[in-house]
Image (cartoon, rainbow, N blue to C red; front, side):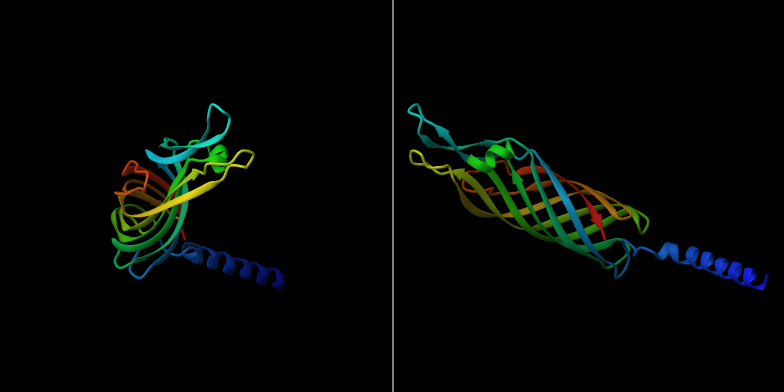
Length: 213
């Protein structure tokens, strides 16, 4: 009987401790001094980039056809870190890369591909909500390395190959996001004034889904 009572007491103590600890099982997502790790994926719509491609001439040889629009969506991923100074203001540093293609299977062989890798820093403003569930507005400013891959003219019987033409550009975006505990979703408008040597659409619309760890 004494052993059963002791076991019951230990069980109650364990249950009480679990209830007390459970709210602190995960670190807070925002607040003074909070430091977060960000991991996210991108769907980038409205790219409008251009890139070179290979084609076949009337004689059957492979020729370079020059730039043509890449109208497909872009896909990418990124990582970052975020530090909160107050309950409502933070700053974050992001590194991300995105690739645009009409058909990834064919483009990986003969082109065209276009894309950019960007490093940005900027403020995050909490608009309303609680520590772990809130709506916020991010602003990211930085620099991007741009690239367009185009098929090289090939000699008869030689396989097609890709060459990359690179450039650089300022980069910026702003938008609105929602933080639902560890999950974040952002919709933004981005500006890339010099997409690369082949030109392209400066404005596009990234949607990011990721984790706030």
